[in-house]
Image (tube, rainbow over the protein chains, first blue to last red):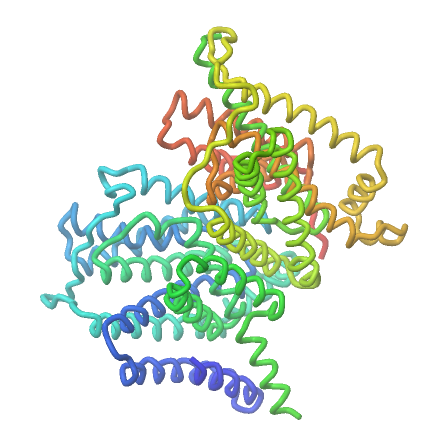
Amino acid sequence: MDSLVHSAANASSRATLAGALTARTRLVAALALVIASLPLVIANDYFYDVAITVALNAIVCIGLNLLIGYAGQISLGHAGFFALGGYGTALVATRYGWPTLAAFVAAVAAVALLAFIVGRPILRLKGHYLAMATLGLGIIVSIVISTEDRITGGPDGMQVPALAIGGLVVQGERAWYWIAGGALVAATWVASNLIDSPTGRALRALHTSEIAAEVAGIDSARHKLFVFVVSAAFAAVAGGFAALHAGFITPAKASFFHSIELVTMVVFGGMASTGGAIVGAAVLTVLPQVLTVFHDYEMIVFGGLLMATMIFLPRGVVPTLYGMLASRTRS
Amino acid sequence: MSAASVQYIASGLTVGSIYALVALGFSIVFNASRVINFAQGEFVMIGGMSAVSLLALGAPMPLALAGAVVVATVVGLVVEKLAIERARRADVVTLIIITIGASILLRGVAQVVWDKSVHRLPPLAGDTPVTLFGATILPQSLWVLAATVVIMAALTYFFRRTRLGKAMLATSHNRLAAQLVGIDVDRVLFASFGLAAGLGAIAGVLIAPIAFTAYDAGVMLGLKGFAAAILGGLGSFPGAIAGGLTLGLLESIGAGYVSSAYKDAIAFVIILGVLFVRPDGLLGALRSERV
């Protein structure tokens, strides 16, 4: 991930010369390079598994970062969308006998529709009230999944059939690595383009002041709703892939703690930075894997690290490092 | 009124009082700092667990309860000193993440200091239920209600009559103006964390004989306390109490008549419904945003 931070920083420091387009292309290119070369150092299936989880979490974080970092709207319930993507895929495939790929697409579309319906009243709320509403939404989803055990298998979770594209069944960690990696590159590309589009500028404007943005002619409700639906769809894509990859899904994926983990990844990496979202997802996904060594002290280290980073690097890891690098190259 | 509904109202008021105490903690910290302290639920847990430990060490009941509240208050003050105060200038989302980090850290410490199993604190006045209007009510429920009324009275006195209480209120109304008249707003924030943690711990020792306690017992109580604070309008003390009692009552009645499986979801369905109609909470003042 070092090379990613480095090239993103380099790209941005020359942004005045080469223009924003180059910075955008460089991030996507650097990411594709990292993903393509990672198999050279990955030793076994376990590391592939971790890499796939990193990529899928990064997709959620890129979407969430559009909402939190750019539009300034917090969500403490995105695990709900993530889990609905997974459960939706599993249910449509098993109960209605749809092909898994079609079930996956249908689940993502359904989650996007749900976000579209609940988004308008929820996004009227501001600050802590918005935090409460999204948190409540996520918890309701989580409780429904745990309680409706005849449909979802309840707390025990449910089986998910394997992904089949055409007649080809996707099997093995390597195949999934390329699917997750490809999806991550695509998500980065979509997000980068969105940020540099008129919609992205509108989002940044309403982040600073919604009223001022509206005075300037921006339909803030429509833009907020759009980015909310996009971020929910990203979460559903990652959730659907995660369920298909694992072959199993449990209500823990919908838990409040998972929502918090996702927000933490975004803030840790650095808000309003797509590279930051990816780095945040990578660090905070790999860290618990490393921390299993400490076992009993896992939560202490995780919580302590979270506090320390936010106290000493309040802007997040990537923007802070980038700022240091930029000031060094300037002097 | 049927015996069943008296039963639901009694248990609703009991758990509602607990939500109210937790919600007050949220509002006190919010008023001093504009921050939602997600570690508030952990103070409830620390209160309950410390009381269990102190009793096991042989401390008499009153001393164990008082000691538990002191432990949680000290932890609250330490969290403020080491984390919140250092990050004073960070934006609100960053501060929220810091409190989330603190709650995970405290839960992790609790797991190591204590264990992962469920503990029960013995009730203050035995287990023999009292019959009231045909409903059976645990004596502990009456203790919860009585203690909550006493705490409300004490808090009213504190905020109306004491220098520190008045300073806290002044800071919540206008931080800059409070600073200009010589109020040490950093000390107010420090004291607010201690007070909120103490209130959380009182809720924790009161509810532990009824609902048990464990290292993760604070999560749901914290979230529902937050919901209660939002329901009543964040930062309003009467609102926190009204919100807590309303939530407790609706939850208990809903669990009794609608679905007990969805008991925990009721609070969040209500809060979503209320926020859709009144985006500033039930008792929240209508404000206009300055550009």
